Image 1 (cartoon, rainbow, N blue to C red):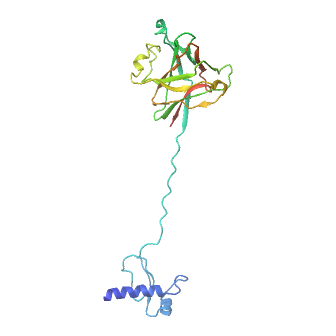
Image 2: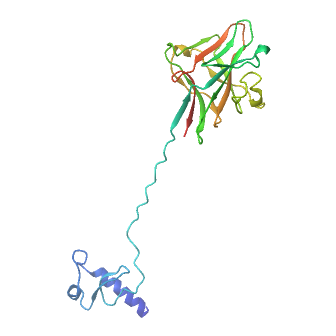
Image 3: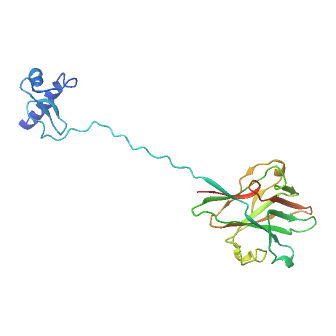
Length: 248
């Protein structure tokens, strides 16, 4: 064994043999009494105790202090917001004389009279959707009928939606022909809404997902099937009808 290794081993053995340093402060007299011939050292490298030779030039002792990981912050759940009372327009699809007629209304009226094809569909737009809005969805709700809130279904309560790529400006007409520049030819009508039976059960309903934007516009139409009357009528208020839900 080399002289240097022997000296280092002796230092460690001496430090391990100290009986009372953990319970009281050691000084030169303590080292003389407990381990004659040793000297007390308190080194910056972590060696503290009685040693025959100075351990202060040795490599630092490994740290025994455990590090506590920094607490991780819990992701904040996105807030759900809603926009009610969209601008709503009757779209007269059957009568060519009304293909350029604008009719803004405070409700949605999807109407197919008995022994006829569908006469009225709907176009609605939600304005001023905040930048950064995501997970947009066309939801709807119904409440107890009163002077402001009305909702009824006759015949087939199935409805379809199709999102528009934009919406006519205030200088343009919202009509059957006026919507054509904003219809995506590759977008199909989706049978995403069914109002059958719900007028008797006021509740909130989750509707189809929509692409978010500063304006979110959709077309709605009811069923054209059968000889009976198919009609869906619902007023648009703060507590009744369609609303846009989104996360921010």
